[in-house]
Image 1 (cartoon, rainbow, N blue to C red):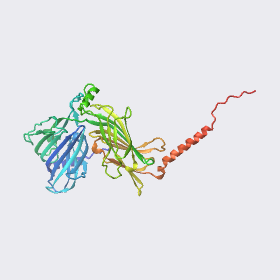
Image 2 (image 1 turned 180 degrees about the vertical axis):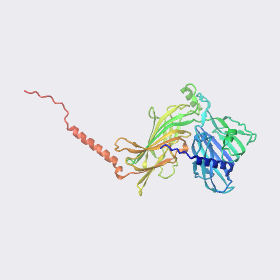
Image 3 (image 1 turned 90 degrees about the vertical axis):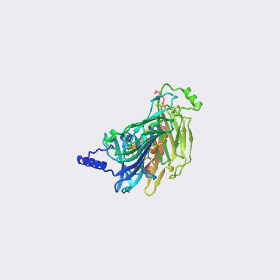
Length: 492
């Protein structure tokens, strides 16, 4: 259902504006230190920001965190924790204007803070599609270079005593980085490099930065260009179909995946001879995808893997034994896939992956309520890849009712469909989900709860029996019909 937009009355807008002005004039928090660390990858950037906060007023239970609008739009995962604790804190999005340069979220603190009380918050975000190949084209032997651009200062609605930004690459091969020119907040050494890390700061005595004056006067972009010795992978299209069968005690999962190498596009033509020579001398081009390792659930069977041409015989599966429901998975099944051709920058590879599993390992039954609960993974994570578009289809048994769904995070769209196959009478209910820009942190489970009556349990065998006897009777009747053409007898 599309969201319904509501217009706030002008009086309320005026009140919010005055409230914001008051908060900006008298901040209730102070940042004693902010340290942001961006770990560069291929299509994914993992950012961890630590806020050492100090309450300036009594009874404070909310802390506002600001994000540049560009980075907030590219953030697919956001989690806030108290340093040293496992459970994440509740966050709430704050309203913003369409042309705003930044957005804010409110973090609900675990308890109210008194005056001068301190707390360390750890904000973890995963950004997608913020890196780009530079140069955009490369030959088969060239190395892969990427660049990442972000803002120099971490915006905050509170004054900050000291602030640092660290940008880390996987290997200590930084090609270049921006050296900003600022007249305040910093000593002479604004930017420095050590190994694979570029550090900006420390910056001292920053005022409230979530205002137009600070952004216009002091904020500026910084760019780090680095070598990346792994393929830049994206899954442009991912369709997962999960069918639940109580009569066969089976759950079938099938994935249709379009894999894309988002690295520099190939300049010139691909040479198979040159590719084999590099592999023979143990110096394969690292940004070309040669093989892929995928972790699958334990206890699976009938695994199949094929592409547009047919079965791919260069794959190998190491099956792990099944794990009882509720027990942690210690060892997954591992599928090592080698595509039919090396995947260079700008190329796509489409394949299908499927398997069966025992329904008892992922389903539970509540006798008191008569409800079944089935655990369905959202996706199979491909290491280092972002899933641009994901569609999940969960097909329930025919006759399932009272359907409820618990998702680990909101879907962009969700609806109920009807799936009809052979020997179905009324069709099977199918729950559809749509997601966008998912990473390995989104590889969690959907829980589907439904009821299935006793007559619906036997619907399939009754239909099969009826079809069998119908064919039997039809065959018996047909055999008794004389279809031969008799010669016409002559009359005297």
